[in-house]
Structures are given as structure tokens and as C-alpha cells.
Image (cartoon, rainbow, N blue to C red; front, side, top):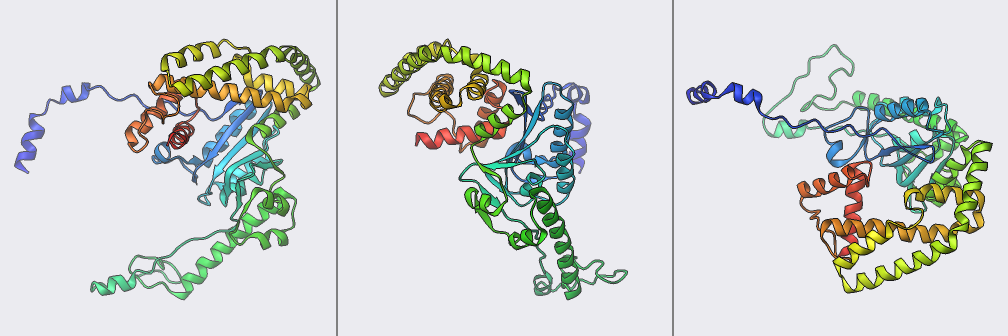
Length: 400
């Protein structure tokens, strides 16, 4: 203690007070806007309040979802709202309120489930006007659960006996080390059943199904998208891009549709030239990838950036689909190949890596992994660290 006091008295408090503080992290955007559609992410475990773990491991606060809905509804640049769901569910607290916020949203807001929409995530999605999911998505897990540990045996083994003094009934029934009574278990089951009833009623109302039918599905099972559609839990099996284009088109008024069709016609006239340039660029990329010449890669990236549509790839896709659906599939494939090649090539060039190898990011090193993801967010390539980390992980797996 004496030594501790000496250290405290000897410290230069003025120097400590003047020490440079780390700037607070910039707040994550509540949503991103493209083609007049605000996409609100609902990813990872759901909790009512934000936690310190969410910045590292992912997760979403339902209060933040509600805040995003309010802001998007008030944003004049937003014509429609899309909830992008990729979540296993989470806590009961805040879920019903998020459901109500979606129901009361003034702007058309469907949900799209990518890979996983279970439990509380499906509860929230059911409030949407419609639900789509990619074909490999897992949907379901209707129901509620909790776990109670009876540690009285372990305490007794250590020679400890816990006495609970309460006002009576089940008060204090879950105290650590005390036996779990049948009355406490029965009361907990009653509470779980009541919450499940709220869950079932919400899904039934949102999906236009009978309560009895949803109760039959409330057994915790997970269903792939096609099966979930057959059960009435979703409306359509589609990709995220298809869901985006669909809502962007449906949210346009007559004048906007006409303007989109006119722009699509103009872009379609440039299609043949674009096809030739894309084919040439793809061929060049293949040669450079085979030879693994980084200098050539940098030159190719510079060339790709000058191709048509670079500034408005998403807008071009939307407008072409609006005016010429029959030509959209082929054009979409070409544009995707080109845009993907550009992003991957640029990433490899920035990291000083060669094509065909994993990016120069050791995803086994948490600090370097997060730093690399933060750089991608800072450069505007991704909206959130979660998306950037997922992208880096996918690239590393492809490079193995």
C-alpha cells in the first residue's frame, strides 16, 4: 500500500490530463441509400440496447433499427425501406416494439433474409409488407426458450447451503445455489408460453395466417427458403439484388418510371460497346491472373475505372431492368463480372498481393483483421465493419 501511494504522489497529473485521447469511433450509419431505397441492416444477435461486443463480433440493437426506420421515413431522398436480415434472433426485449415500428412505417418496407432469419429475426421480419430470402437461407425457429441451472447440488458438494428468505411464492426462486422448486419451474414455463403466444400472434397477423397454423410451426424448426415459402413464412425466393431492384421499381412513380425507361434506352444503345470492352478487360484480367504480374494488374485496374457505367452501375441495372427486362439477365451477368473483377483487383493491388493468393490480411490475427476491415470501411468499400470482415474472410477462404 505504501508503494502504491508513492506511485500516485509521484505521478505527473498534468501530463496525464494532457495525454492525447483516442478519438471516439464514428457512429455507424443507420442505413444506406441506393436508387431511393434505404437498406437497414439487421444482422447478428439481436439485443434491445447496443453492447460493446457488437463492434467486435457483430449484432444489432432493435432500438437502432427503430431509429433507422424513423430517420428513413423522414428522409426525402428515401422512397422505400428494405430490411436486410441476417440474424439468428436474440432477446425478447425490444422485439415487439421493433415489429410495431415496421408496421407503422409510412414507406413500403419489405424484408430480405440472407442466409439466416430465425426466432426474433423472423418475428421482426413478419411485420414487413413482404419477405424474400435467398435459396440457401434458413428461416424459422418460431418459439421461445430460457435455461435455468440448478446449482444446489454443486453448492452442497462444497459444503454450502443457500437459504432464500423471500416474501413468498416464487420470489427468489432462481437464486444461485438454491434448489429450483416445481412452482418456480411452472411459473417460468407459463411466462415462456405467454411470450410464445405473442410471437405466434405477430407472425399470424403479419403473414396473414391463422394462429392455429402458426402454432403448428412453433416447434423451433428451421426451414430452407423453398420450404419456408411453401409454409407461408416468406413470399419469394430471390437474391438481395433482386429484392432491391423489385422494391426500387415498385417505389417509382409514373414520371420516375418514364425517366428510368428513357435512361435505360440510352444505356442500351451503349450495350454493344460495353460488351466488347468487358470481354477485352476480362480476357486481359485472365492473362494477368495467370502470369501474376502485379504491375499489369495495376494498369488493368486503371483501365477498368474508365469503362462506361462505373459511376452508376446500380442505377444502370435498375433502369435497364425497368425498360428492358428481357435483356437484363445477360447485361447483369456481364456487369457483375466486370464490377466484381474491379473490386477484387483493386483490393489485391492495395494490399500488395497477387491474384490467386489470399489477401495480405491474416484473419487469424484479430487486431490486423479488424484493422483491415476498418480500412475498407474508411475507403467507402463497405458500410460496416461486419460486412468488410465477412468479405475479407470470404477472400481468404477462396485463396486457400
